[in-house]
Image 1 (cartoon, rainbow, N blue to C red):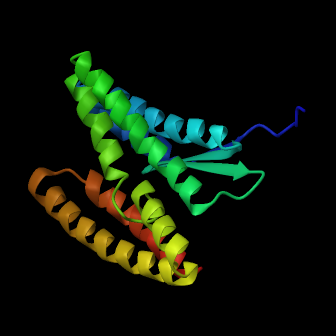
Image 2: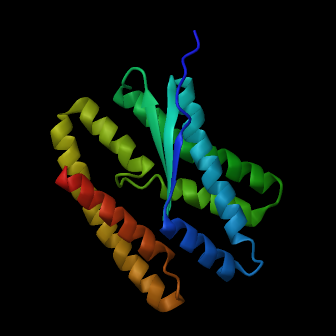
Length: 194
């Protein structure tokens, strides 16, 4: 039986548009920006396909200065194992896309696609790796304890990323990692207040 659902809501932050413009200007024909956007789209498509196979649908999509965030709804709440499958589907799609790019000798596309997949496997909430580790801990132990542990672990790892990002900003004039780490810090602080 067909069930009508409202079309997904899409939010585009001014920071996303500003970042897109700056990256386009800095790219100067190198080709990082288009391949980076393709790699991100492949990643999100992996989540979408896995969610759809498990009965989910896209409620919304938010584009911010540091990435995309899907809002997926399910008729029946997923188990921690199924949530982990949806989380791992994004990096798995990056692995497949990166492998295909290597076969086609598109080295830049391969590197960007694989790097986005690998970065998302870091055990930091709200990244995919953090969601998987949380699911493993919450499935075996107390969910509240798992939440506190993951918030602490995420905070420590984000602090490390901020330090590495600051060094990269000073040494190489590249603020990408620093901005991403600061965005992750906001997410960790937000989770800590919940």
